[in-house]
Image (cartoon, rainbow, N blue to C red; front, side):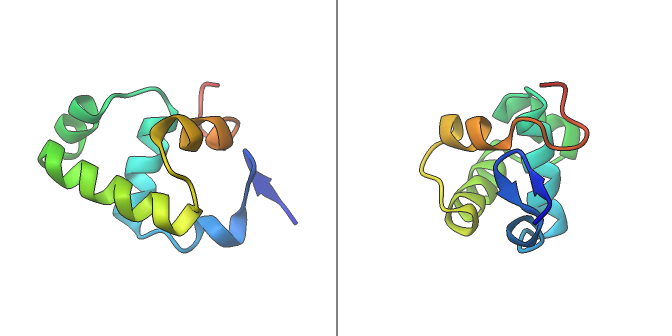
Length: 77
């Protein structure tokens, strides 16, 4: 199965479009405040999206998400 970082593509398709935007920007190295500004939404909304992403991808922290998400298409890492 094709993967993105250590996530397989099927798992990433469970993310909403907005969750995927947040995921991509976080993995590209932006902080919560920067993502909020880029997407024109509040930092709390970003945190809510992250909680949802953590659950869907079975991770428990931003560090774990970043570790598993490195190497996805479009990332600089």
